[in-house]
Each structure stands twice: as C-alpha cells, then as structure tokens.
Length: 371
Image 1 (tube, rainbow, N blue to C red):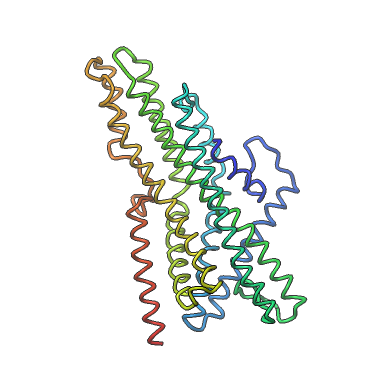
Image 2 (image 1 turned 180 degrees about the horizontal axis):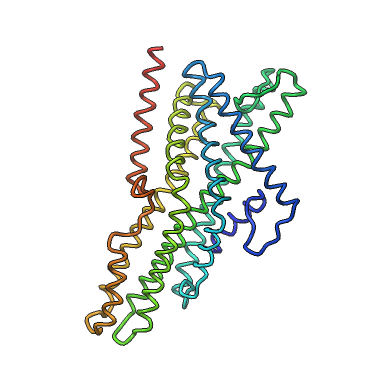
C-alpha cells in the first residue's frame, strides 16, 4: 500500500488513523476527539446559519455551498471511523502473496499505480490549499479595509461584534478549515488509491492469465484464487465507499449549484469570483475522481475475460478450462461499485451530476430574477 502512505500519514496527524497493532493512548484519543469536535461543531454552525438566518435565496445559496461540503465531510469521518476494521482487512488482503509482484514487469505495474495515487494526493492537496489561501486573502482584504467579519458565514451562539471575540472565532474557523482540508482530501484520494490498487491487481492477473499454457494447473489455480481474492477486496471497498457515496453526490451537487450561482454575481476578475470558482472546481474534481476510477475499475475487470482468450486455452485439458471458465463467469459483467445497483461510480453518473447541476443553477437564476 505504498501509494496510500501519504494518506494514512495525514490522517494519523489528524488523529483519525492508527495501524493495526499501534498503541493508542489517552492523549491521542483526546486529540482525535478534539479534532472531530472542532470539525463537527463548525459544520453545525454552518448548518444553523441556513436554518436560522436564511431569509432570501442569495443568503441561502451563500450559506449552503459551504455547509453542504462540510456535511459531506462529517459523513466521511463517521464512515471512516466506523469501518476501520474493514479497511484493515482490505490492507491485509492486498498484502497476500497472490497480490505480490513477480518480476520486473509486475513490479512496474504496481509502482505506476502507487505513483499515480501519490501524485493525485499531492495535486488535490495543493489545489485545496491554494483555494483556502485565496479565500483567506479575500477575508484579510476586507479586514484591512475596515470591514471586519468572520471568514465563513456561520451562526454563533454569542455576540461577535467585539474584536476580542471576533478574532478568536475567526482563528477557530481557520483551524477547522485546515483540518477539514487535510481530512477531506486524504479520504477522497484514499478511496481513489484503493480503486487503483484493485485495478493494478486485475492487470497483474490478466498478464498472468495471458502467459498460461497447457499443463500449468498450479498457475491456473493461483490465477483463479487471485481473481477471487481481488473480487472480494473490491466488494469490501464497495461496502466502505457506498456508505458515503449517495450523500456525497447529493450534497456535492448542492454545493456545486449554489457556489456557481454565487460566483455568477461577482465580477469575473474579482477575488471573490476566483475563490468561489476554485472551490467549485475542487468539489467537481472530487466527484470526478470517484466516478473516473470507479469506471476504470469496471473496465479493467472486463479485460480479464479477454485475457483468458489470449492464453493457450485450446491445448488445455478439461480441468484447466473449468478453472478459466470460473474467472470468465465472475468477470463477465465487470466489477461495479454502486449502492445496491444505484448511484454507480462511473462516468454516466458524473455526466448526470453535471446536467442536473446546470439545470438547477438555471432554475435558481429564474427564481432570483422573479423575486
């Protein structure tokens, strides 16, 4: 799991992850509780702003596009903490001898996937940090012009008109935002990294199948065992992902719609437009990552059946052919990641989200114009 080392390291710094046999003392437990409480309380204040202060569509959309993002993050954190044992099982399965590379060619395949996963984590983390810097630059500019306000429009259960109260509250929001960025990007790219690890194993299995010849009963059995193992890993990853897939897509779509609606009201060259646009692109990238790598997993699983035809199956005996037939049956329709057949992670779902978001933004503009 070399490609996910940066993700687990970031989650460990945030207090959310520990290895299987790693000690987890009272101090680390309290630190994890503090981080979770900061993120969840900040999300609660963003949501309360919608329920208690949203009097018109402009204020509603401005408050909603941040609240939807943080609500999604809360779902991800709960799912991740509740399914730690499931994730440990996935790691153990991917460290099985069948999943280890044999030779330079297979090592290159897995190394390429690990490098892609690390680069994706680095790119998205940098992209999100740049968005946060633009947003806080806008906040600092307003403060310098004598218009102090909190970075985020969140409901506070105390008076923040005094600078002595407003500035500590602003610092709290900055800290919550930093933790949220690290956790959100780490979890999203971790799921993508798991998809890439599974597709890498499927490619290994396909390469080994292509090299089978008559008399390779042991290798054929290993290929079948490897294929069934990878399929089991894919099902475990599916149970890990589908817990947040539907709320993630729905809330992300709401966030994209409202943020683009807000961006359309600012000047194209203003810092407000830049901050909201980059924020929207970051959310859209997160949705695209889920759909793209889920789609790649489905396509790669279908290649296993093609690999069976490329081997020397004609000269094999009936017992060897039966083993290969098992693999073909298991991968005939491909391995899809979905929630009981709904909300499948593929490019069709991504295009549906784009179309629905565009229609919703147009509807918001019509309602705002009539109002």
